[in-house]
Length: 376
Image (cartoon, rainbow, N blue to C red):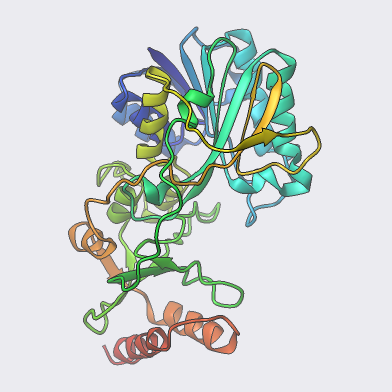
């Protein structure tokens, strides 16, 4: 089987599909730093602006992790008609010209809710009007062996196959809550309205600013040495948190640009799971489902097979993959640096002034870190 990757980024989709036995025929990526990574890591044709691409090869799979800029809660929220997220129409133009057996789309869960779910409505209607079956499911990367909480919607569509056998064949249910972790992730850039708190995981890695200013999350390592217990993962750790090998984006770009590439990427193990489902679709799980009427709010998982829309009672945890390392061990092996004095001071002052729930010992650790960094 062969694939074409549109909005390919640094190749998260393609690396995962290759692990499932699907070869890469062509990649399309507009941003030069990411395009350079693709040219270095993949032995295939890499093209630029999707708007200038006249056609794609006839392949089995087309992937498109189209821009979330206009759909994300922290983005412009312009919706599917925004100048960047609206580029999914270019993907549809190319798909219609050379229809593959499978199409795989990826974006943020907010696409199901923003402006009444108009983005999801547009996508579902496009496929149905042309006789495609589709299924989508919201999944979280932390359940695929990664130490990062990353919720994303993956939609699989096909004219001739049942995409439900790709996304709806695995179900592990909601995980049991475990107390007492050795490390906790949080957003040091927040502190007024939220923390992005993660038990044993980092919050979602972000793309950062258009200026290439790095904004990785921070990690509190419980019982760690003062001055090291409040830290930021290195870019090599960030690559591992997305399932790439350390150094995947190391081609001379500054860290801010590399963090943007990593933060925008598709988690590799999730792509590999989808690839395995495409290569070998399996029976559907026996879970409750009900008809999903047009106009109703989009749920976290749904499908349309033979023109019948259904809502599925599926969790964001298809299976329970055990991470190879703890979050602290990832930082030990691949690197971290102390959170800067100014960043820690700003975050702590916002947190203490807020009404957000937090562990008292966390605030104590932050203050100890400030004192240490002030005298270091």
